[in-house]
Length: 349
Ligand SMILES: C=C1C[C@]23C[C@@]1(O)CC[C@H]2[C@@]12CC[C@H](O)[C@@](C)(C(=O)O1)[C@H]2[C@@H]3C(=O)O
Ligand SMILES: O=C(O)CCC(=O)C(=O)O
Ligand SMILES: [Fe+2]
Image 1: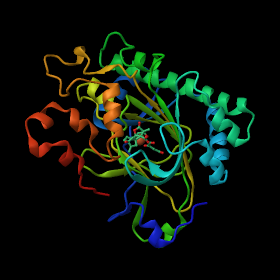
Image 2: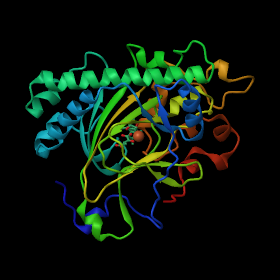
Image 3: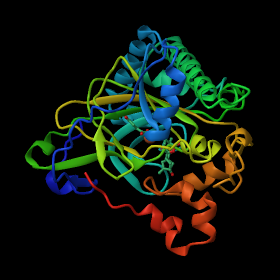
Image 4: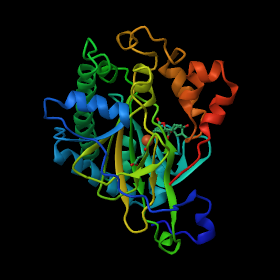
């Protein structure tokens, strides 16, 4: 267990909550088995870029098996976990997020989902039969990817886009650059003595990919930012999935869908374990608005490939407005709306 003395805790972002953040009852809930789900999905992506899905078709057994493997891994001594690799694109990281100095009250495993990737390194560390970890991961990833593709096809239906696999084919592509992340937020008991203060587990950001599929245990902490800048706590639900619109889907819909800003606050008593699949396109894919969604409008974004966007994202800090660099108006016509200034947001809690 990580234990921190008060001065040490100050190394992390501690934010003051002026008023308790109310649980917001309005997070869209979509039942994927209902015939009108396509229109509700479009509405949720336009209004929040975030929603919760039920009747998702992912077997509970796949979820519990992978979660058990994750818990086993995170319970190992740190020296063992570090053998999974230094913080880097596909390895174990502790408190340090990304390559540019971001920190959070979190440890994680970051893995590529490309077929054929050798997970053996992590497997041998957890002391498990290699088959157990690999099969739990593969079962979970195939089921979650299938669900993500179904959602993207329902969205295409709702937007009247032909063909209906216009988005989903990018995740189905053999070269799809998708990532999977297991996050563990240990409890932080010191927080109990720090009235009105919260510790950042994973700082505010948007996800750069097309779509993110998040499942967590029953510990709270996830928050999303509404358009007015207010933060809303998402009540945890271990039987459902939470879906984020990523920056790339915002661009492909020419800004009709919004990528959602979100963050995770640490909990003083309970540990949070989350598993997130980030569905991304092939590196060479041009990320641009679909012509059928333009209706005579100009693209709001400069043209770029996923490789270019990913490279730029990896040079940014977590909270930066990464898409700002690729917006036509902000970058070309108005220096006051430069990405640097847009990246600095007033934090309301
Ligand atoms: C600070 C960073 C971590 C991140 C890469 C980045 O430079 C900016 C984007 C971050 C993010 C957020 C969503 C996902 O968790 C992630 C894997 C991704 O694709 O973009 C992380 C990156 C990371 O942890 O390496
Ligand atoms: O762990 C979570 O619940 C969310 C983490 C997240 O947003 C991310 O890893 O990109
Ligand atoms: Fe995220």
